[in-house]
Image 1 (spheres, rainbow, N blue to C red):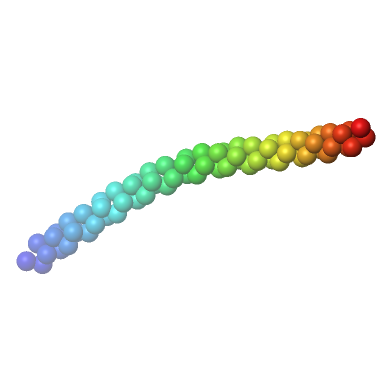
Image 2: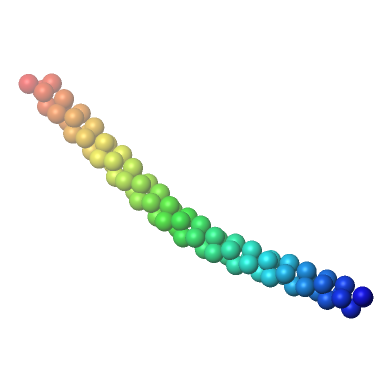
Length: 76
């Protein structure tokens, strides 16, 4: 009886270990997927940041040109 109980206990422990290993594998896979998504989003954010900087620089150039044109019109 004790041997049967011990074998059943070992079977239960073996199944729990197997389940834990499956969980770890699943978590590793999820981590890799999320890491890839994060990298893509960081690249996207970097591109958007550059676009904003470019637009702000263009806005400043337009502002300067308009100011110059206003001065030219005031001269006449």
